[in-house]
Length: 261
Ligand code: MLT
Image (tube, rainbow, N blue to C red; front, side, top):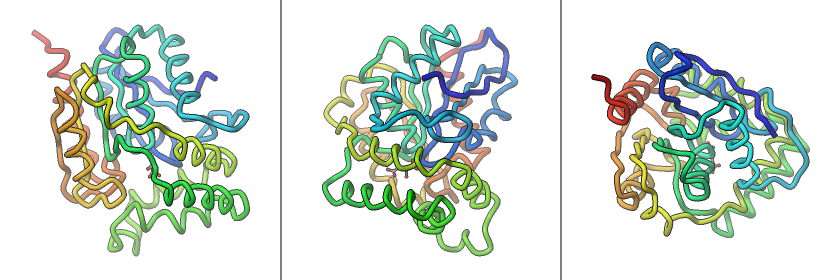
């Protein structure tokens, strides 16, 4: 299914494709779209059931989301791209580089991890899917925001908190429920990290408690050519809480991959 997407920057520049977290939308990447469009072709898209992309039938698997990504790359005429994902976006990016290595020449993994859910995590996903269908996205946001942001940023809410709430509330409950199922059934890719053959940038917010810095360190230890950037003053949604530092890290990484003479 071709996802709804936006593209900015010079059409002939090297491409960076960005995948948002759960249950957000491509709007999550607005600071990076604005900050990189002078020199890079940046594409951001809405996962199925999020933002303006259709929900489609269930059940949903990470494999379907990788298929959608490949369809998008084909649609854009991109034989290969640098791929970046935050959290659930990172789960998809990791599976994509594992399954479709010829389509990806650089990887950005932000606030994410390679392991799968454990049994307790799967039970929580199933309960969350029921809650979201029964109570809707506003109630779901009330429960999720304290896991995404340190307490002191919730009251009064920072601009990042307000933006994240707006994205969560705009997601379709069915889309969120299906995404929870896809995350619950995702593969454990820890053993596959050593096979990643592309330069990789790992970014983590110092205050991320959902996928803490130790998870980022494990990614860097497992991936042969990986570097770590830790962002002060940022939690799980690090690209919105430290937008300039995140964009600078992306720019430095892109410049390293595509040196300009
Ligand atoms: C996300 O931000 O995408 C989610 O926190 C990922 C997850 O629930 O595992």
